[in-house]
Every structure is written in structure tokens, then in C-alpha cells.
Image (cartoon, rainbow, N blue to C red):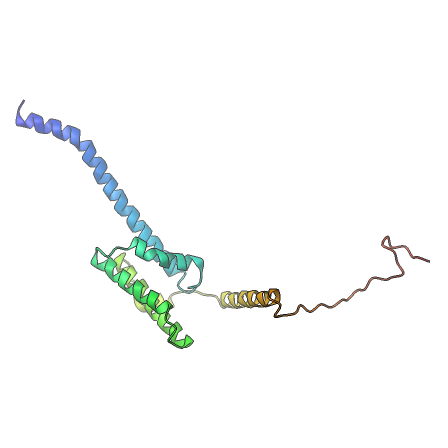
Length: 179
């Protein structure tokens, strides 16, 4: 057997194994990118609703899906840490805290978008969202309902009741008169 025969046999045996490994590698990379895209898309879609469960879950997946091994992803993690630090900052006035929260979230989404190949500018990220006024009003009303219900259950609030139709004592339950 010659060297070329041995190489042909080796290539015949190893070819399918190498093909499977390459396919698995490509599929894993595609799946990784898909998870990163899902985090980014969720954050972009919910950026006007920072209290939504989907938004919070996507934020909490950032350090799971993005790595510090690559420079662009490392930048995402750095800005995420800044955002997380800001979310816990109680030293600012509520108004200034809200303004800074938006600034840092926009920066986070901008860096993420760049990492994933999107060409959004910061103005588009900040202003390019639709949030109906009714959604804000509904959230405020739901919060008021929750707060007042809690006060009621804690005994801090009374439930007013008005009786409008008193039963006629002269009538029995079957509607007939006693007399």
C-alpha cells in the first residue's frame, strides 16, 4: 500500500467525522448568535416598558449570553454592569435617576446592536419606540388598584358600602304577602 492509498483511506474514514464536527460547530455558533439576538430584540421591543417581565428577563440574560472573551462582547458586559449599578443607585433624585437610566440603557442597546451587526444610532434607539399614552395610564391605574387593595387588606382603608334596595319586610321570600 502506498502513501496515497493510505491518505485516501484516512480521508474516507475521517471525512464524515470532520464534516459532522464542522456542522456542529457552525450550528452552535448560529445558536449562540440567535440567543444574543433574542436578548437584544427583546430589550429593543420593551425599551419603553422597563418594568415588563420580558425586559427584566432579557437584562438578566446579558451576562449569560455575552462573553468577555471578545472585545465587542466585553464592551456589552461593561455597559451592562454600568446599567446594573445605576439601577441600584439611590443617591440621585428620581427625575435625574430616570434620565440617566434612559441614557445608560440607550448606550447598552447601542453597543449590543453594534456587536450584533445592527446600524442603529443612539437617537433612533432612544426615540424610535411607540408607547401609547393609554398603556401608561393603565399601568398607573393598576398600580393604584394594587396599592388601595393592599391598604384595604391591611386595614388601613375602609370599604364604603351603600344599600340602595332594602327588602320589603311585608313580603316573604316567595314574593307573597304575609297578610
